[in-house]
Image (cartoon, rainbow, N blue to C red; front, side, top):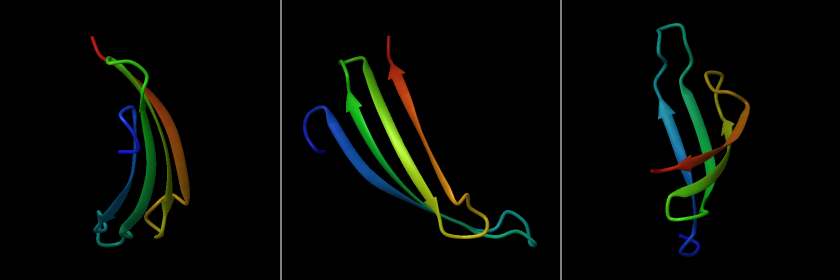
Length: 67
C-alpha cells in the first residue's frame, strides 16, 4: 500500500508448458491501483514475458465500479 487510496505490486507467473511441444510461460506484471471513490477504482498494469511461451510485452487498464 502506498497510501489509503493507492496500492501497487508485482505478480510473477510461472507455468508449465500446456502441451509437450509447447513452451513454459514466465511473466512478470507490475500494477498500480487507485480508489477513485468507495465504489470505484482504476488500475493500470504492464507485463514482460521471459520465455517463448509468453508475450514479449503487454499492458492495460481497467475501471471497476461496484453497486
